[in-house]
Image 1 (tube, rainbow, N blue to C red):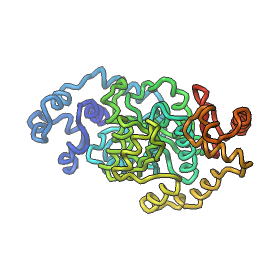
Image 2 (tube, rainbow, N blue to C red; image 1 turned 90 degrees about the horizontal axis):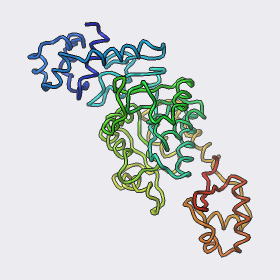
Image 3 (tube, helix red, strand yellow; image 1 turned 180 degrees about the vertical axis):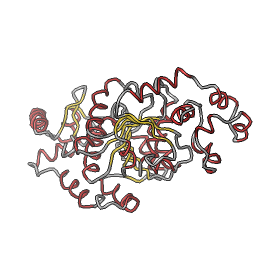
Image 4 (cartoon, one colour; image 1 turned 120 degrees about the vertical axis):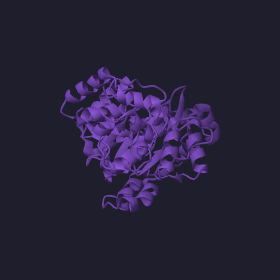
Amino acid sequence: MEDRDAWLTLAHAHGLHAGRLQQWFVQRRAAVELADASSATLAALGLDANTIQALRAPDIAALERDRAWLDGASNRALVVWGAADYPPRLAAIPDAPLVLYVEGAPRTLAVPQLAIVGSRNPTALGRDTATSFACELGRAGLGITSGLALGIDAAAHRGALEAGATTVAVVGRGLDAVYPRENEPLAQRILAAGGALVTDLPVGSPPLKHHFPRRNRILSGLALGVLVVEAAEQSGSLITARLAAEQGREVFAMPGSIHNAVARGCHRLLRQGARLVESVDDIFEEIAGICGEKAMSLPAATAMSSSLQVPSLDKDYEILLDALGFEPANLDAIVARTRLDTGAVASMLLILELDGRIQQQPGGRYSRRLPGR
């Protein structure tokens, strides 16, 4: 058996990861030897009967699909545990994947990076926030990692692309297709910009529910820390945050309104000890020492803080914006809060919307737009 086929065989053995084979690799024994090892030897390593059967009698058709995909384009690679191009931060986690299927540039996996995750159904403000933070963190020298999902994930990738920064998409299916399909153009932009798509799932693996926690441990494992922008109480983003904490990564969360359902997961994380984030300065303060990169300088963060300052307004407009806040409100609620004339409020809302300071939400409601977006 060739070495690549041996690693692919390991990739198809359910539940097998580097931690389970530590004893084998500590002895500097090769993957090809493991794939050819006797059932008794495999059992002595603590492997169960199903795993041993997968190694002894691999699915030949599945291996052929992997080979065909890998050989189908020059920008595809199989990055194996212990190789020079295997990302060192990911290699350090207890259940590091034995192989990574990579489309794009494998070197991007080792770039100092922050994972940004959150709701698939964020508020407009949450989406803008994810884009802004990813953009400014990218400009300061960090790569941005996310999961290519709709919502916050996609916004984070777009922010990184806007900054010309590296972005890595860790996905919960095989790389023979993009999930969700709506994000296929975004995936192509990531590749064109020198980023990467990555998974440990073999070619043809569908986006099953149980694949995403498996994906999430790679997402957090690649990163210096994880920023949760918006998340409901029952959210996959909280799984990513938990895995990050278990891996010794920094966990950051953004507070939100108590009336916002997709802020409750972040509030839960904050109660559990996550670092509260109000600006990029909060992130830089935590990871600058870990990263040690000259790019991680606070002037870049300060520049963002400055860019988010809103120019001065007439008094009535300031009253309206203060009353509106960042949570959507309808015209009647705004009038009640400001005690201004209904006609005047309607006119001011139109002017502020045209000026890009607020945005209209479904149901005739309005919310403030994140400054600088």
